[in-house]
Image (tube, rainbow, N blue to C red; front, side, top):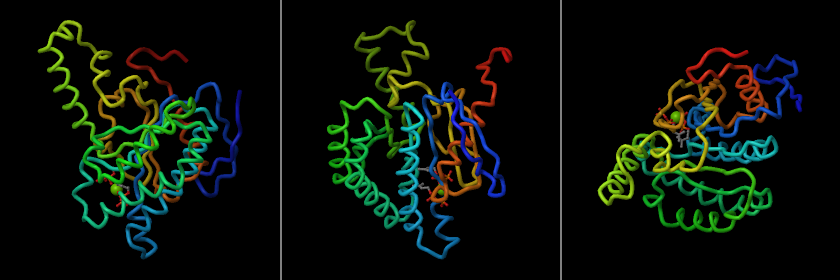
Length: 256
Ligand code: IPE
Ligand code: IPE
Ligand code: MG
């Protein structure tokens, strides 16, 4: 089955793109970048950019649900983002609380399961409380898994996995010869989730910034100069369309 959308990646482009509903990426990751620059362009404080970015989250989560994406991982706060001025860090934490308070009912009604990756124990307790409520409320849903990457870093995740695997080795719960990709994956925050298929990064940057390092081994990347607050569902459609027109070989040979 195909769905047809207007192609708006380029503002002058009025062509129609077709999304194959039978080949929707199972797992999409988005590095939600460019909030600060979006605000700067408008002579607004950076925090206004973050506020505008939350509006985009609402629309994109909804569209991913509609399209039947199963996992959506949103990079919201990295292990390195603590380096930012404390005022900005606080504003981001407050926005998270506000988002959950405001959106939880609708997310729940849309059958979304809320999950996080990253060390959330380091977040302010008010954030942890809202997250706990969100996990509890949505845990029996069966729709999109909204995976919020909070205090997340790919290196931190891998180190944490190694430490906990080492402990299991010492305790004899696993044996070294049995450790393979699959076993290692079970020690990651994303245990039981498929690897990310498509990583979207708006804002013009073309780097991974410590996002899903292990899981992105064969992910397709999609970049755009558009800044996250201006990212619309049309950009998502275009990213999925481009994804569907690539040949994923996984190291094998071209089969098209
Ligand atoms: C992304 O926007 C949001 C977070 C990292 C939390 P930025 O704040 O990084 O925006 P730019 O990159 O400065 O424009
Ligand atoms: C990546 O964006 C982190 C998030 C979007 C949460 P950054 O803005 O922190 O990354 P760099 O500094 O440009 O690499
Ligand atoms: Mg940035």
